[in-house]
Length: 429
Image (tube, rainbow, N blue to C red; front, side, top):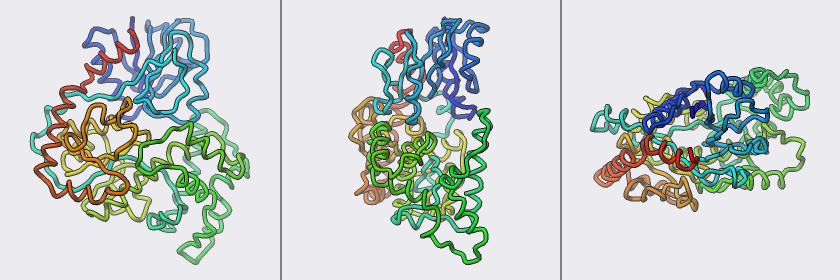
């Protein structure tokens, strides 16, 4: 039996996951290889034949519908999902399996294909090389991208970008959408109505010739404002209760016309908008506690409120440095799955994690299945985030003790070797 792990993308983070996971499988006796970039559905069968692959493990991908001459087994490991992910579940064949980061991702996987939950893990060797004492230069850090949203609900008006940046972002959004279509080999000839509804291009053109700035926000980006209002209405802020099936139904039941909502927009409003709402709320609240706050990830610089704190996208080594050099690392998860890569990596550096509570904390992938608030991390709710952040910020002795507890637990119980053993058991390798 030969196992091939396929990265979700060619990004360093995704490559690191399959590399560490593959090494752990080899350590416990399995013949495992890994690929540093996704392998398309059409190439799987030929690759399996040429390289004697028995099992493919692909992250965030379901198997193709094509017949398999090589008779390989496909295991899907879902760490993140969109509503449209469910469209290909029918491709699962006898012997295929799916595992998820936790129990609440909202996939409609039949029981006979579901092998259970598997979190990510850490490579303990890389943390042995870090300095033993952390340098707490910053009060807070928050790592994670947010999407580009231009017209917002009134309660988010302070987040707005500057008018001239809006024009630039409109163009970049349009070009990015076109580039993705072309990269997939699709001929990109959008209908005029599609451009007008998605990008509100009429307003964009009028803005280009409007000498009176700042913009008249009442007439600008009405469609994007509509998306914001829908998400804001149905999303439970920093509660970790997102279920993509339930959320999509609420959105569709509330729209004025379903014609506006193609697959791309449904995926965006159901997965990306809740992420935006939670992360913007956390960042805005804690900027009121301390301006000594570093925000990393795509698009933060495009928002006026955050531009002075944003440092752009960073790689894994830089993220470890930021965890070590911050008193508090802010975390959130829309699905309520607090045990994920950033949380574990922060803890392994000796950093202090500050995360919201969730009714799913005791479900598979939830923080409280392995960690205890006040012992291994700090906990907050929408109502007390500022007071709790202030309390932990001032209590150096207790905060450092909690961080040390978490570090020991992660390095002892969440290594990739332990993950490989768990994976082999739940997938019956």
